[in-house]
Image 1: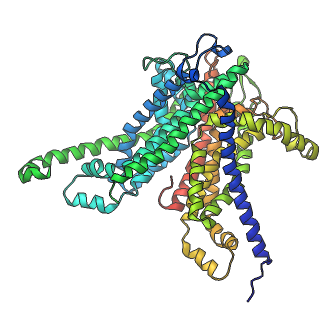
Image 2 (image 1 turned 90 degrees about the horizontal axis):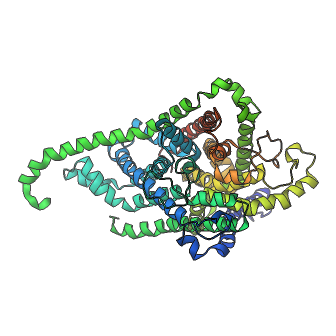
Image 3 (image 1 turned 120 degrees about the vertical axis):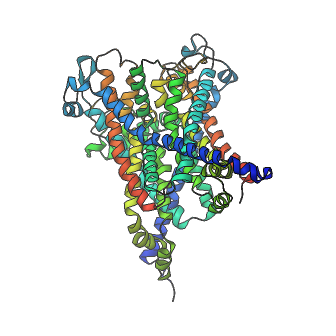
Length: 287
Length: 320
């Protein structure tokens, strides 16, 4: 029997396959276009002083300075937020997997984490602001860290949860058979075996935290100085991009593009770095 | 520990057990946190937004079209419609290609193609919203302004949702395009995950009787996953509803009920983000803005709970 290549169904097959590949090309091209746009517009005004100086007087009218305040501020904010989120995430993820397993309560916790993940950062920002009004607190590094931790918590727990589920049961059973308690299994077996995945989860959350603008807008404020205490307001890179683009001066807008490039580079390093680190660390796990 | 002998191990046993019990207690308390957090966020916003009901009833606020904080008029309707327009355009642009890509990756692609696709999607998901905003400003605004809008003006001026009322590229369409790219990784990965959960036997049976791959997808795979795809779209929509900075930078921010995709809009998140500066200087302004956050939270919670429950059931085990 000779296959009729021009039968309707084969034509449909070809058309659909073409559309699929085109769609993929469009999405991949969007990524390329985004990166190219940011690099092409950001690179010309990226200079050494951009990343080593804080804004000098008249910076927002085109005078000298850089966005070191925002770079450091962002690292403080995302670093603090990630650390705070980690303190809560790891116990939750371990509890979900080692103690709760597939129980009903575990499913409720997972559902609420997914729902939390879906809450937009602007709502977390508004919530943080409402709390600050209640207790009479000003915009500060601390408030920004707390709100970012809230934002990062569900991302981190769910990412860890996904990894911990893949934990080889044999390994756990062997540890239990030797008389280990659940806590010992969680800390000495699960955490070590799953370290690459846990590190990836932490970096994922850090990347999300450092790029978020809407949550720190209300809570961390903005300042030209590098914060010296938790109670001081702090600048952040996303807001530096946003505010510089909002000025009417061309030079300042150009620096906004350069700041966007700096932010993109940091995020790309984190994203690619997490791949590399988890690859390195997985050499020390039981296959 | 192993070398210390039986005696030591035995004597330390009660301590270890106690430690385990304490840890279990502490962990279970910490695990309450995510569940409580949702409730606390909702309550805090309700409490802070409550004073707005003094100015007007809830319905008058939601459906009011006039936004003049200095006169005590807080009508949310232009912002609600703006949010809906941008979200619908974004989701409508994103869903067809994303479904095709998910099907392609799941049903056609070689392992090598998938290993290229994953980093592309990961990077798209990793790019911060503000960078999407800059891209929108530099690439999409001129694209809409100089290319799409003039074309629409020439060919589609008979269709009211495609009317061009204003000359700039800051429009719902621009915001929608940016959103479409932003939510693409989410839609693709969720739909891909659903497709991976469909048993291969079904596909094999269909292919064995001579169906083409597309016939297999349409007649065998698609009916299995339709609910899941709807849930994935709802999830993506809820993500799009709350997107703030990227949309705010390209959508024009005009507080008017839009009638065309070339109109500017002013979505709720943009309203909140843009006005936090003056909200303490005008009475009830802060309550109104936190009320806007509450409306957003309410809609997103509903969308999220429904879609997550459906997806949880479809996948049995949870997706990322």
